[in-house]
Image 1 (tube, one colour):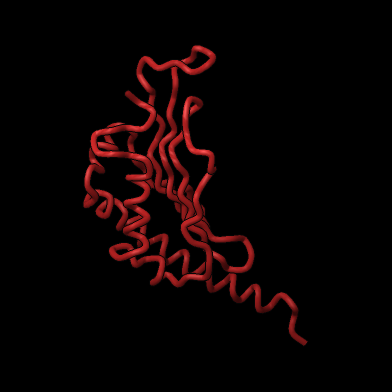
Image 2 (cartoon, helix red, strand yellow):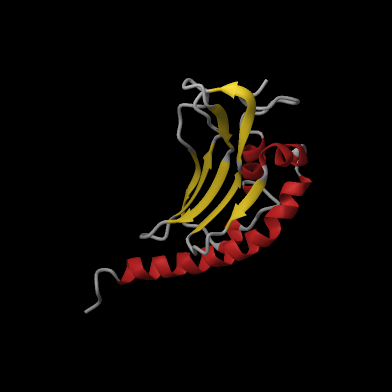
Length: 158
């Protein structure tokens, strides 16, 4: 007799393999993709950009860092710090589901009411996740950069 968990373990194993393949490829390709996006260099100068590998096989995060907002003070009189946006790819611990979430920039003085926006949740192959040069991933990278920016503007900063 087969265990009731056999199918779930098989799905998780397949998803882990697919995610690992995607992650390895994405780490190599993301810098070139970001460099091809309009105004990326300007945002990188303001926030700094990094790919957080964290040696975790179930997580990949692309994020802009925090930045001081010059002479702007928060409600307690402390120098205001703005946290940059993040794009997070993750694999669920069970069920083999992969999630892509977009977290917006935030500060104590401003932000959006949503903690994050889930761009997709489901079962995806490495090929589907790695279609970086075509929608939806190119759109996700562009969304990360233009989450709240208008030409010449920077969030919460005058």
